[in-house]
Amino acid sequence: MKTQRNATAAIAVPARAAVALAAPLLAGVWTGHVIPAVIAGIGALWGVSQDGSDPYRLRVRRLGSLGLAAALGLLAGELALRTGDAAAVTVCLVVAALAAGAVSLRGRVASVAGMHLLLGVTIGSGIPVPGPWWKAPLALLAGVGLVIVLSATPWLWRRHEIERDAVLAVYRASSAALAAAGSPAAEDARRRLTAALDQAHHVMGRHLTRRGPARTGPASPLAAFHVAVRLGEVTSALVWEGRVLPASVTDVPLRMARRLLPEGRSAGTERAERGGPSEPSEPSERSGCPRRDAVDGSGPDAGTPGLRALVALDAESDRVRADEVTLRLSGGPGQGRADRVRYAVLLAVCVLVAQLCAEVLHGPRGYWLPMTVAFVYKPDFGPVFRRSLHRCAGTVAGVAAIGSVALLTTDTYTLIGAVAAFGALMAVGVRRHYALATTGLTAVVFVLLDLLGDHRALYGPRILDTALAAAIVLVAHFALWPRSAAGRAAAQTEAALAAARRYRDLAPEAGPVQRHALRRAAYHRLAEARRAAAHAHDEPGRPGRRLPDWQGAIGAAERLCDAVSARNLSARPGPVPVERPAGRPAERPPALCGALAPVRD
Image: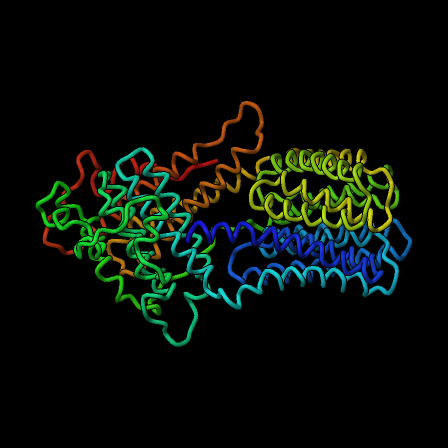
C-alpha cells in the first residue's frame, strides 16, 4: 500500500502539470484565441513550479498568492510597456525588484509571491499583448486557477490522507531508528526521524490550535500525532542507550501505527509489503509489545528506561485523545531588517544591470535576462552559486531538447504534446533537481514563444543571456554580500544551541506538554541549523578563510538532547532502578555541555 501510494503521488504531480499546460493551449488553438491561451499557459507554468504534495490549504494559499502577485506584476509591466518609454519599463522593473526583495525573506509564501511579482513585470514589459489592459492578467489568473483546481480537487475524496501519511512516516522513521540503534547509522536514522516529525508537525500545525468538537478514537491522525510526539522522545532515548534492539522492539512503532492509523487491511499485509514474514499468530506477539523479559529484569536489557517507556506508551496509545495539547513549532530566527534591505537593493541592482544589457543586446523582447535574474537570485531557495550553475546547465539541455523536437516537426499539436511532456519533466525536476526543472521550463517557454509568433533564432542568444544573467548575480552577490550564507548559518546555529540549552535546563521541572515542546523545538532548530550550515559550506568562500565547525557543535547538541531525553524517562517512577549503558556519560556530559558554548562566525 505504501508503495502504491508513493507511486500515485509520484505520478499525480507531473500528470497535473501536463494537463494544466496542454489544456489552455489546446483551447486557444481550437477557438483561435492563441495569445490569451499562451498567457494562461505561462500562468499554469508558474503554478506548476509551485505545486506540491503538502496540505491542500497551504497549497491553495501559496498558489493563490502566486497568481495574484503575478497578475499584478503583469498588469504593471504591461502598462509600462504601453507607454512606449523604455525608461518607464526599466523603472517598473527596478521598483518591482525592490518590492520582491523586501518581502522574499519573510517566509516561503511571501518569497514565492515576491519572485512571481517580478516575473510578472518582466513578462508584461517584454511581451506586447493586444487587446484591453485587463485581458492578459485575467488570462494569467485563469492559468494559475486551473493548477489550483487540479491540485486541490483530490481533497474531495482524500481529505486527510496527507496528514495521515505524514504521521505514518514518523512511525516508520521511528522503527528504522530503533533498528539502527547500537550501530554507526543510529544518529543519521534519528535525524531522519526528526525530519519526519518536523514534516508531520508542519502538516498538522493548523489542527493543533483548532478549536471545536474533540475528535477521539485511534483512527484520528491528530491522536496518532500526539502519540508520535511521545514516541520521538522514547526513540531518542533508546538510540542514546546504544543497545542493539530485537525485532520485537523495533516493530512496535509499526504495530502502533496499524492500530492508530488503520487502512482496512490485515496487519500481515504491510508486513508482506515490507518483505518480512507474516505476523505470528500467538496473542502475545500479535499484541505488539516487546518481550517482557526485556523489561522485567530477567533479560539482558533489564533496567533500560527507554524500553519500559516504550511498553508504557504502547499500552497507553489507544487512550490518547485527539484534543490533547501539542504546541506548534516556532520559527527560527528570521532575516534581520538589514539583510532584507541589502537583498532588495542587490536584487534591484542585478535587475537594472540585466535590463540595461538586454536593451543593448536585444532591444525589444529582452526579457530573458531580467527573468533569469529573478529565478536565480533566491538565496532563501538554496546556494546561489549552485543555483546559477544548474540554471545554465538546464538552459543548455532545454534548448538542445526543444531544438531537436523542432528539427523533427513543426506541427502545432505535436508541439503542444511536447509542452505537456516537458511540463511534466519540470514538475519532477522541481522536487528532484533544479537543472532538470530548468530543462523542462526552457523547452516549454520556447514553444510558447513559437505560438506567439516569435520565430527568431533564439537558441544561442538565450543560452548566452542565461550565462550573462547568472554572472551578474554571482558577481553582485559575492562582491557585496559574500557572507550571507555564513551569517544565516551562524544565527541558526546560535538559536539551535540556545534551544538545546533550554531543553537541558528546563526539562527536569517541566510538565509533559512543556517538556515535549522544549524537546521538539530543540531538535527542530538543530535540523534547521544543520541545513543552514550545509548551505553555507556549499557556497564558495574566500581563499584561506575557513568556516566554523557548525556541524560538530550541532552534532554534539543533538547527542546531548538524546541524553536529556533518556534522563527524562529514567526520572519517571518504575520498578527497576536506572542503569546507565556502559561507557555512557553522566547526567550532563561535560564534553557535550562544552560544545554548547556559543559558536562564533
